[in-house]
Length: 153
Image (tube, rainbow, N blue to C red; front, side):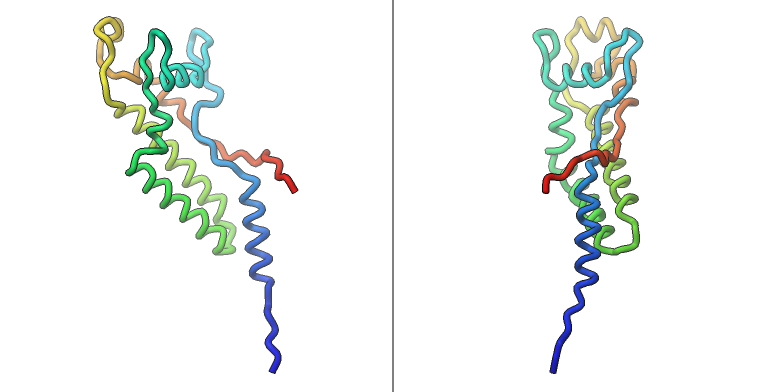
């Protein structure tokens, strides 16, 4: 008795995984700028890491490290791997769903960020919301699927 092993399915999965490996889902602030010309990404970084005038508010880390967020991200990643193994071309849709999930988590983290502004900042802004002033940063959270990654052999 001879058993012949058909590896076409495995080769196909390997191809799909290789194609997925070339793509990165990135969430953040890409091209938006404030009226004064400062990039939204720079303002987000200053708020995230803090300065001598701005307290550190690490919302980027909180986006990815909070327990509830990790569970949502893990579920979206599972969907990506299911889509890749399903062989139906749904992996790009799953990557878009992952990107949208990450974007919504970051927006929620920014919108609900705990803490308070200083009295002077509250007086200037007219309200007490640490990561919100004009709404520009919140509205600028986006995701992209970057396919430009070069793989090393």
